[in-house]
Image 1 (tube, one colour):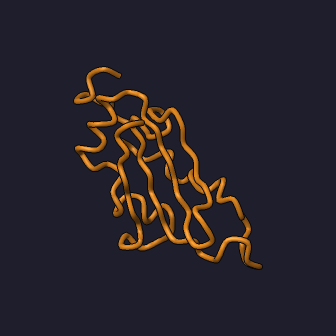
Image 2 (cartoon, one colour):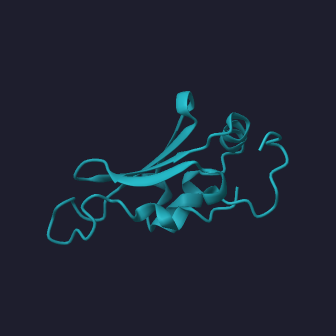
Length: 110
């Protein structure tokens, strides 16, 4: 996508991210990574603040004030961090690696 000012209606994060994953970020946090290979599109997403705390928090079942969104320009990555619902490895933890938690974010329209 070379003209990032004209993103087709209905374009989703899933369709523009080259890599998407969620991971355990210690015992008390999960992190979500999205890499956008097209630099212009990445900059447009960043400029328009498409993946802000108010957008992602409801999809992840957390309050916006606990969401941290970080843009890492050297690799066109967007990192979202939230607290875990239960400590990693604890008796109530059903996903120690946090590996399947990104799915709810893939259909965000950018």
